[in-house]
Image 1: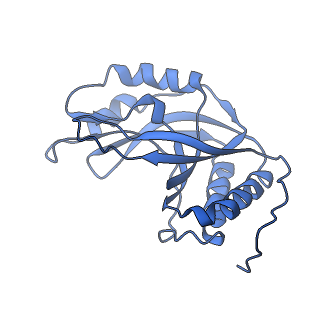
Image 2: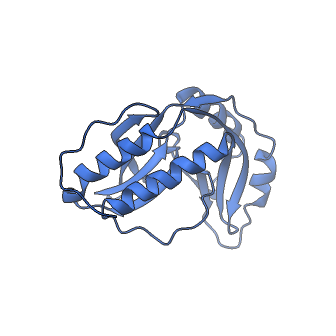
Length: 196
């Protein structure tokens, strides 16, 4: 199954951002669905079922070692000239540490991960349809956005289902398949030991 670790903002934070984005929406951008807005911590791609027990145990341990922290959706940014995202503010060091721990949990569980790079917290909002367009005007209009702070208390493991119906505008679907409270003791893992 196709998996990633994430921090999922609460409904109130999503609603604030949705209101700010509402005035930007047009047909030039392929907008992501609000139900799928999240901060990806570690993208794992396809993960075999045989790795899931250890992955769950290691993510639980990563959550245990991470204290709850404060975050808010903040401003905007872009990757290249087509991809628009909202950023984060608050305890970014804690968010980056949680991302590092989620990445390490996946690697130590045997999930082949992409080459490590510096974590950029972002929530993807959309992608321009035409390569000739420029995303910067959207960024400028969202630059002053400041969401209300919330307490991040959970690390989620999310399964993504890519569009398969061939329907124009079809969105990926997301399902939380595991969630662990930050700072909570992890249950003992009874599986085979790995030395990594």
